[in-house]
Structures are given as structure tokens and as C-alpha cells.
Image (cartoon, rainbow, N blue to C red; front, side, top):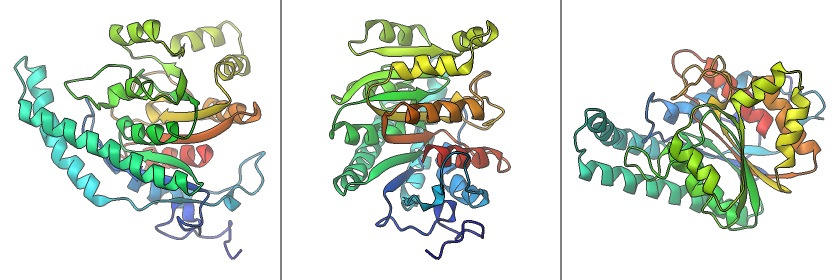
Amino acid sequence: MSFDPNGVGRKGSLFGFPYSEKEADLVILPMPWDVTVSYGDGTSWGPAAILDASLQLDFSISGIASPWTYPLALSRIESEWAEWSERLRRDARLVIEALEEGIVPDQAAMDRVNEGCKQMVAHVRHLASAHLADGKTVALLGGDHSTSLGLMQAIGGKGSFGILQIDAHMDLRRAYEGFVYSHASVMTHAMEIAGVSSLTQVGIRDYCQEEQQVVEESQKPIHVFYDDDINEGLFLNRNWSEIVGDIVDTLPEQVYISLDIDGLDPALCPNTGTPVPGGLSFGQLDFLLRSVVRSGRKIVGFDLCEVSPGVGDWDANVGARVLYRLA
């Protein structure tokens, strides 16, 4: 009751909100991890940068009454995982460099990376399961996209849901660069979760033949809204509302939102690990999220991944605002 939404937020608390993890209805798990990224580093620093930038937000949102009264909290950023990520990243670089040079990579280094990533997924699943057992909604703040798998596994143990993925990439490789839990294969593993009924991908514009084959042969429905097709529709006078209607129609009653920041226009996230020209504007994303809610569907969890601070605060500033809208 003493929180002033017009004043200065409390440093060290997400958005400066006064809620503890115990008081929160929504608990956001940070995972500072970017071991398997295949191009630019830095997403492991995303959670801390977003936490710092979140104090700069003003809280009012058109059409949503007093959003600051919704109790949410960010769990402690576990620095030991960031340190482990940095150590394993050195192993991953050795493997990637060997592959790029056409030589056989060090199997021991590859094994260390795969084992470390497996333990990271298990840790997120354990944390998320404990909060779900307490009746809380759980979200995840990465880190690279592989960090979201443990949360989806935990939610999948509670019931059935479909995934709405906003991303430049399909992330449907069976493995990438020898890494089983690569950021490029997270949706392959997600589709193996018994509770996941379908996958809807929006903004896809960088993908390979193997991933197309996975879409065509999947036993579960995969609906892909390619960036090229979205733009062609807009150029031919379809409006965004109609396209969003088509997207929402593919979703079941319970929806998990997986948002890789590179699904947006790279002007909004220039330092993300694998930026790709094209993507959604902030306004298009906001309208899509609102449309999911207006349709009566229930959002059972979400993640925001691949925010890399780079030089300056722009990426973290955008990431904090995307996180706020998701919450």
C-alpha cells in the first residue's frame, strides 16, 4: 500500500516493485547462461541488465488498470551459474572453432558442454516445479533460448498447452554443433514434452532444410507464420489484425509464450546473438499479446530470451519493456 507508482523504484527489485518472491503471484526465474550460442556472446548478462534497466519504466499501460498492483518478483540471479556458463563457453568455442576449420573437435570438451547444459535444464525444471507446487505462475528470463526448456518441462507436468513462439529461428534442429541442448534445438526438445500439444511460430526468417523437414513430419501440429508471408500479406493490403486472428486461431485454450528477442526488428535488439533483418515491431508484438488475452486463452507461463546488453542500455531497455508487457 505504500508503493508509489509515480516515484522512484527500489533498486535491486524488478521494476522497483515492492513484492517479495513469497508474496508474488508471478515468479520470474533468471538464468544467466549462453554456453551454446553460435555467433555473438553476451546473453548471459541479459537478466542483470534488464533488472537494472527496469527501474526506468513508467508503469501505466493503455487499457490495463493499475498494472503495478499485480504482484511479481524476480528470483535471485545465481552468479554461480553465470560463472559456470563462462567456463563452459570456452569449451564450446573450442568445439565450434574446430568444426569451422573442418577438423574433429575435442570430444571431452563437447561432453562437458552437454553435461553442463543438461544440469542447467534440470535446475530450472526443479526451481519451476517448486513454485508451481505453491500455486504460482512461473516465467523465465534468459540467457539463451535453451534456458527455457526446463520451465516448459515443469509446466508440461501440470497439464496440456500449446507454445506460441516469437522468433527469427525455428530452433528445431535435433542438435547443433554437437550440442544436444543447443539454443538452436530447444523447440525440438519442447515438442517431446507430453504436455505440449502444438507449436505456433511467428516471425520465422532464418531456418534450414532439416527444420523444414521436422515441421512437415511432426506428429504434433506445427504452424509456421514466416516473416516473408506476413510481409506479403501486409503488402497486399491484409491488415495486422487479420493476420493475428489467423495466428490466435491455431492456439489451444492454454498457451505458453516463448519470446526470443531476435523475433523483433533488430533495430530493437542489435546486440542479440543472432540478429536477422525483418521481424516484428514493438507495436505488432503488443497487439499479438493483447489478442491472445482477448481471445480468452490462458497464458500458463512465458520466457524472454536472448537479450544481450552490448554497449549501452538500448537492448536491456527494450527487453525490460517487453518483459513488462509479457507479465
